[in-house]
Image 1 (tube, rainbow, N blue to C red):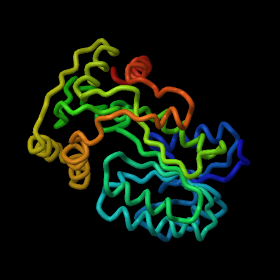
Image 2 (cartoon, one colour):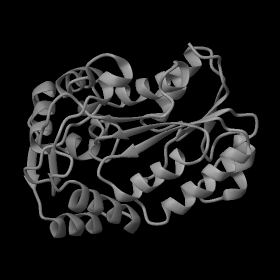
Image 3 (cartoon, helix red, strand yellow):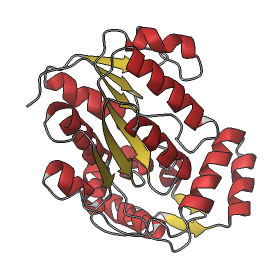
Image 4 (tube, rainbow, N blue to C red):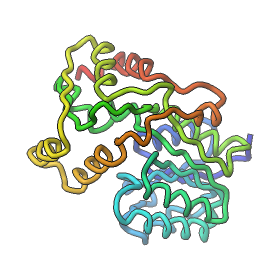
Length: 275
């Protein structure tokens, strides 16, 4: 085990960041949550807040909201990484995305920063179905997406957080790029079907075109930047480029990744899909 460090967890209230912060705190590691509501406040859109949040910290969990693929993010990550190095940060664990050229550009910035780094290049999260934008459609019993028949190796946020915590607390993870996937490939329709089986309630899956999906989001007054991001992810990233499994979880943690069926069953038991 490594000596304890002060860790700034960016996105510390999000799907992976909250889990990372909880685990590190349980291990007795000093954690600072990087968010607008944090003390001190951290705001990606206000560079003046960065130094105060970094002060006294030695490591950073770098999770960017909403996604590294958003235009302009590469410049933001470059500026933040430079500020982090100047502030004395010695290790950055970056949450990245598979098949996103902007995300890979951000990886290169962190890799070439001159400090320890670990990259977690992750597939689509299981938790998007329970803690994200797919929860409301599931509650309504009707999920409409432009996903087609492309398969995705959905990965669990618990596995991502476990890998991040291992990178901070254990030796041997600096300089490693872990591409994290679940143990099998599934279509979105199959994932919805497994949730329906776990909840024992009927959930309809409808295949839409990108144009139909954009029109639906406009009808529901979804913000334009969110429409752009979701459209990009479905139209560009979900084109078959990521239809393969990796051994990233096994390499990082020495165990198999959590299967989607386990996630669906345990999440169904919480009742969140029956609210």
